[in-house]
Length: 380
Image 1 (tube, helix red, strand yellow):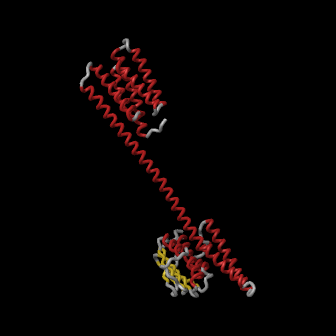
Image 2 (tube, rainbow, N blue to C red):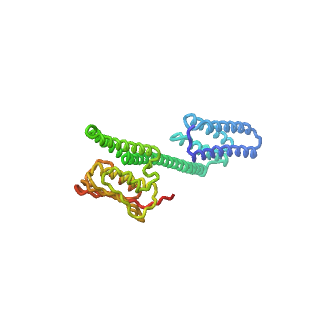
Image 3 (cartoon, rainbow, N blue to C red):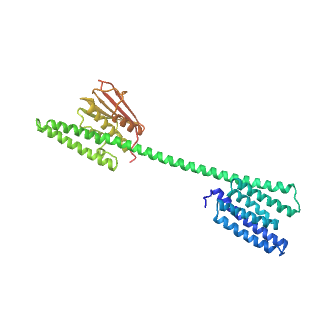
């Protein structure tokens, strides 16, 4: 069986029901009009055979050559019955639909011609002659019935096409959202790793290299560097575990933002942290973003600027909070192409929270980095 469209399946069901109803009604009318004359036995036998043949085909057949043969057998048997009893010609209406539903091309046209011809012959026998109305009438009915069926079929096909397009669009949207979500998550993890684990490991490598160089000439200094490297690696381990669990910073646990900033930037020589304005509680994501921006900026000061003085200022104002880091290092050209990830990650953190990020620097004049985030109070 082929899958029928919802609209066509409903029409097909009513076609079959209409055929049985009209066939039974026509048989009853014949018996009431003519009584038990000599033809009623033959007519009853043909009617029962027609019902059995039609039921078998409508249940077990859908399309194909077998269905075409079945339909023409039904039309032939119905034509004989309608010739004997013209009242059976009313079965032509559901048969119009069945022919249009099962057949295509020349077979459909031929079957419709047969139905119209049977109607014309039956009407001529019923009225005792053939006039123009007996020709125009069946043809007009056939055209009208086909127009109705074609309209239903077109609407069903259009609805199916629309549903297919909607399903395809939903699938594409879902795939796009998944892809965007994966890229966003990848970018976020990259920022977290860059601002925490990568920075700490870089510092650890520098400390270990310094310890190796001082191993023979200054053992105490070498051990000091080893101790700092060990502490840095432990910090990296804590951050890595935090990333695995919930992507929060352990430096913010049971600490204010200012305290976390001082702890995170303690290893930068000459860096001072100041807080201005009246402090207020912020949402965790705001504290987290500011801490990561400060860590990344402080790491740049330590590794790239060559500065001996740096000031990190956290400023609370009623409508937002500003983080500024100034250093008197060698500076750089912000317009030049930079292959590092830090500045881009800092900007993304600020902009994702509806904030702004800016860099002011020039070769030999130091650097000022500013991140501003709108105020979002902690609901707790």
